[in-house]
Length: 380
Image (cartoon, rainbow, N blue to C red; front, side, top):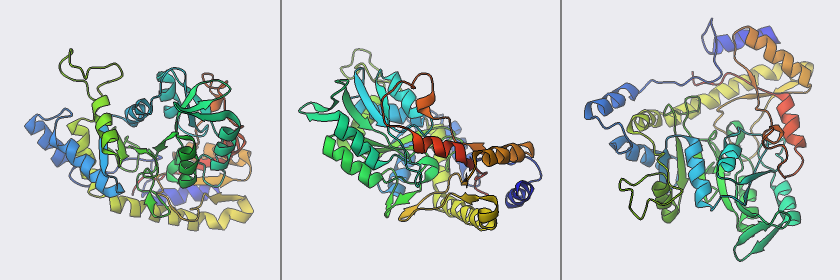
């Protein structure tokens, strides 16, 4: 299977050399818009493309407001600050994800709580979330508190892994019952939808990522979306340092992290082709599914499939192996041939900084981490 897979992927991407995991695609107005930024010398966050990009993202995902930042980590930090996160606070998230969320929680002096994921979605299990809160949490006038640690639980941050939507509506229901702010990590899921609604639109706010390897890129960047005007204005304010150091707005907790006009210019050019990008990504997933269908029984491997009522953006396609040793052999063989495949991240709850944090067991997250390999999935 390994050699056939390498040949098939090289044919798909029309490459006799190295095939990256996910490379950006620039086929539109990127150079033109960047050139106009340079000619106008509007290269900071004050340029016209920032507002235009925010409007395009808002229109595409159906949110009333969008606020652009220099990185998805900055957008997440702002969201957590607006949730009231700080020292002596806790944030619910999941062990199978990029460590960005947990690191951001840690940077604010708070502690992450890790809730296990589901095998069928790779996202936070709403049933395990409810069980954890029922056993550990109590709602007071001041908010939701962990009765064991006496810390306030300020936010819940589930993740749509690889662009596959989790059961986010059920997670929202649990969060509402306990008065916990839901911050939807849709950094990998721009263009994905669940039950007809765009991922990132179920939470009190959602975060999209536009780093160089994402489905659409600004080079680097993140966008916070929401429907609450006051929340959006607070996000803009928190991410902007006032020019006057003695201004009342120069309160502690504000930091300069808004997106530059240069990055937004690239983002605008990408957004002009967003529907085409998602269509091509889904077409690639369909081709992979047809190819690996021949190996399901004999090789005990299958493509991680779309779940009912979900429409993923197919940012990264994932193979699910029955045996971890077969997954490892596949990774070794394909990468040796210059075709980039990858395992998922190490579990955040296993990292030295977070290994003593509270939460549920991570049995499903650990199983997925041992059995999944991601495939080259850049737009062709």
